[in-house]
Image (cartoon, rainbow, N blue to C red; front, side, top):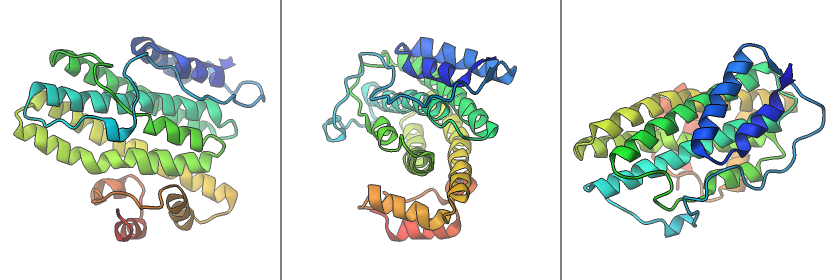
Length: 266
């Protein structure tokens, strides 16, 4: 039986998107067949940056150009931004498998499944970018998702709270609006992809909610208050609203959590 954590690290550190996608499918298949299991007890090494191509250039979010959806270039920029999120999400899923060594088997199965979904999403978006005359790397992007991965590397509880339930859950909030704007702009191809991503991201955020609650139970802390405290510590200005209440409820947020988030929304 091969080392699951070593295989996850291999996927994490591959730079070429096609190689990363292919390795993701290969490792997932080996895991399904029962050919990958826990490796040596030695802990994970720090990962300042995952494998990624030289482009896109990473810049602060405020330096990203704002483009409307009325032109093919503007729609391509939006597709590129979502593709960048999905590429990072592959890395985040594999980092969770690699980094947290003392979790139940279901944890690894969940995040390997997420990695497969994110790889497929990236592939759909890469094809759509090509149809719009671009490739991944043509537009600048930012590194906010991986920055949060660095901040939460030492704690699975904090990772589950702040990556799936904050950063990825933001996609549940903003994607319906993007879909409507793209539909109005006459872009049914991108709409269909985003509808698939929105539907499947609910399950990804739900996995974060489930394992956040599990980590809280192990630590003997109450999930609602713990989540609130983590958000206040790391995002003192509050989360941006409005929130997609229906999707967040499906993804494991409680009505009380949503009410508190709404009251503190930036």
